[in-house]
Amino acid sequence: MTLQALLVVAAALFGVGLYGALSQQVVVMVMMGLELMLNGVVLAAAAMWWFLAPDPTGQVLILVVVAAMTVEMAMGFAVATLLHRSRSADMTDMATDLSR
Image (cartoon, rainbow, N blue to C red):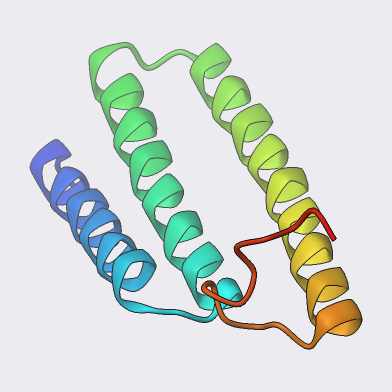
């Protein structure tokens, strides 16, 4: 694949994620849209790194970023699950007040 093709795929991932994050009201769907956006950014960064300086340290850094994203999304899903269990709130406008 060429750099342009990878950047087009990354832009498509980011666009679909942006649409998903802005158009949905369910907390889990918004989080999935944010995850797609982050995956698009990581793909663009990995493609640029590979084509500009094909060095294995860049691939290791991308793996660390993906691992950190996985932990972050797992914590977000845990909070969404706890919110749903305690208040039966699965919509974003129902989850605006988290102080109670």
